Length: 381
Ligand SMILES: NC(=O)C1=CN([C@@H]2O[C@H](COP(=O)(O)OP(=O)(O)OC[C@H]3O[C@@H](n4cnc5c(N)ncnc54)[C@H](O)[C@@H]3O)[C@@H](O)[C@H]2O)[C@@H](O)CC1
Ligand SMILES: Nc1ncnc2c1ncn2[C@@H]1O[C@H](COP(=O)(O)OP(=O)(O)OP(=O)(O)O)[C@@H](O)[C@H]1O
Ligand SMILES: [Mg+2]
Image 1 (tube, protein in one colour):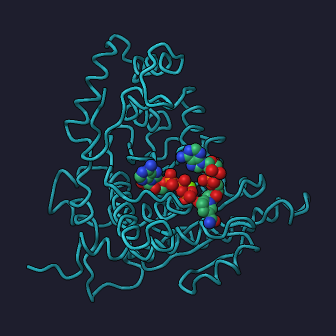
Image 2 (tube, rainbow, N blue to C red):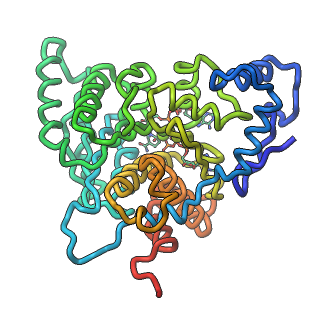
Image 3 (cartoon, rainbow, N blue to C red):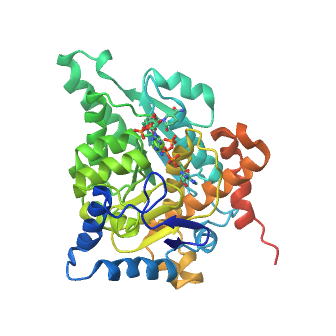
């Protein structure tokens, strides 16, 4: 039995390891139970629920990503000054991971942001600077191995003071790519998120940032300007923590919606074969065929891209003039749809020429062309 999700994807209704229907499996019984109870509407039958999923797919859950990209991408005008197209900051980068924050920050620039900062550990900074002179790199974070217990409080104050100098200038913060899981570092980052919240700065949480917030949900809970971008594992951990359940495939749309609602109306972008996103009210999917290569770093491109498009969607009134259906949507959701679609198209273009050797850097090089194809700088009249 197949349900059609969006234009291209066909998913089995019961998704077992062998692709068969095992009506007696405990996993399936749990999935059925979850679908019955999702949204707290126990009186609806399972069949009605599945019918609901079918009709949701049929009634256009697949986003009109091209129209959204056109509506929110700002026009390039000679009257604009540096910074107006977006100032993004990535909090991430430690001893192990220097690629992830670089991918997120450089993607933001390649899409069209004016300035991209990285706040990382002291060790990671020279490496990230070495990748690109375009990035503004702040070596302010510390990991436990570098800090004596008695100095921790002072160092934390110093980190926060440094971040506070910049925070209000940013249109969006991306927290987590390549952050690592050092407890002292995560403690500082948790306070950085709290400060960003107080300043109403939108926050995209990815990678190890999701490890942090899954264990401390209060840090983002109830903040409508937070976007969480979990991959398959990160989503599993979130669902288990927040819903005390397993991830389900039939009913995936309702589950992502419920998850967003339970975390107080944050936006969730669940990455996968189709990217599913919800702010707790609306659910959308992006199923454009991208690339079959799953090299590491594509999620980092996505988090940097969400930051840019979300900022554009919040700043530019163009959407309102063109299409009320778009202007009525939550800007965080618009940002997710635009970023997901652009990344997938860029991955497709990169794969056309690079095939098996396609790497994250190749996809980043295709972001500009991908956006230009949908939303040219000089549209032909
Ligand atoms: N070049 C770099 O510096 C990169 C650093 N990264 C960072 O690495 C840190 C950890 O992220 P991870 O994504 O590895 O953490 P996860 O906890 O998501 O993944 C852990 C392991 O799960 C496995 N896995 C991944 N996708 C899977 C799937 N679809 N089904 C089953 N298993 C799967 C992977 O083999 C991985 O080793 C983050 O901070 C992240 O940002 C990644 O972004 C990749 C690139
Ligand atoms: N099975 C799939 N088919 C098509 N596209 C996919 C698939 N899985 C992931 N993607 C796309 O790749 C992008 C990155 O998702 P992925 O799950 O690789 O993130 P990630 O594990 O966080 O990546 P990273 O290595 O950067 O941490 C998503 O936007 C998604 O659209
Ligand atoms: Mg990731």
